[in-house]
Length: 556
Image 1 (tube, rainbow, N blue to C red):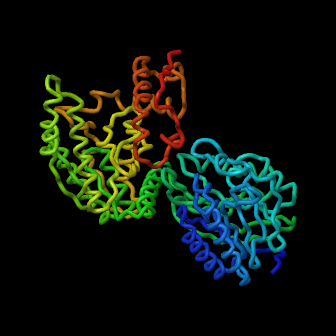
Image 2: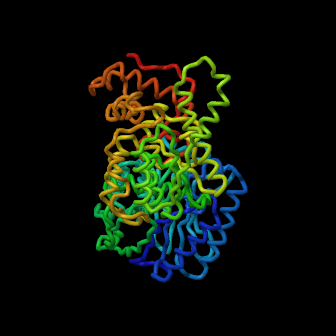
């Protein structure tokens, strides 16, 4: 059926699973069926939806690319029923090259393919390593409408969209896999407004939602009309679909009738929901029945337990207190109160016997030396062994609980408290952990499965942080105050500031030197750390790739 002056578009904000080609295809079929019931003419999915994003080196496997093409052809054949057409992303091999592409499926066949031109190669992205850049595209004809399909990064500069406008595109439909970081939504909106102003065309921004390893895709899909008005805004961190009715106005411009405008969460809520969704999808997509973690009575394990319950439900979270002689009665009481507030399974396993067994075993080798950090770390490593044993026995994944401040300066024990499969707070500094814990006690975000109210006992938030590996220990015995430490780390990690620039913020040269040195020498630990949710502009791992062997120190 040819469209003359109106059509209905379904924007599908869905959560694919990377590599589950048949499962992702079933999602496409499911949403197409719903779209047909709603009278939609075309269904738009996010970037590389059929494969999942980011596929990384998986796309270098020919059988994977071929499997995607077979599934696409099956989907295409189903459009012979006269129902909605589909815009589906997939890796596309042609003439010895491999592209990040989008295919238009209609009339029982693949009507057209457009390939991504601008391949991102910064931060978390590495597309130039696995894909070839496509040629500047022209619009695709869809039942009489000329649709421009720039893919994600193609809209972050002006060239591709200008080319589409100049070659006759009437509407820009943008499949995206744009991962979350703090304040990313404002950046996207401003860039897409710029594209609308430059081209004079309406723009549909369809973004992926869901967790994929360290990355969390937040959705928040939207539609801008050619007059820059917001016609649709979907929520963040949820799967959702909206139907838009496009009509030609008196000037022959396509215009989307305004529909739902979902409210956007503030920064604290967005960070919380990102951590929760990242943990939830990592556990579920990798097939773990639940999680287990050590609940120490401290802030980091408490917030991780709360996030785990919000992500998975209390019945899939197992918390274990692992006390030793330095564990205070206050910590034991606080851990129990936290477990009770969350409603999780809670066990206590004392570690005196394994710790003292290790000490006895090592007594001959350690004879004549003073007790110190090595003996303290035996406590942490005993806890790690026990948690891993519970994980091995029952299948639950160990959640590791170190914050970004600790990961930065190496204030964590390899094969001890760093044991685990995933870390929801890996990219949150200690000061942010405190703020977010207080926020969660006062708010109950939509969509979480945990209880409302005080889920992290207030005493855990207000007491001095300590690893409790020796008598009267606090974190500040070894580290600067966290507000000082975190500000210096933010300058060094996210902003890459020089020593002179950091000095201007009021920090002493001695403290800056010390923190910088701790940051660099802990790189070997971070390389062995569990993955964790990306929240900031620059996380450890995908964003920040420093050498382990590194003698540079800023002394200007």
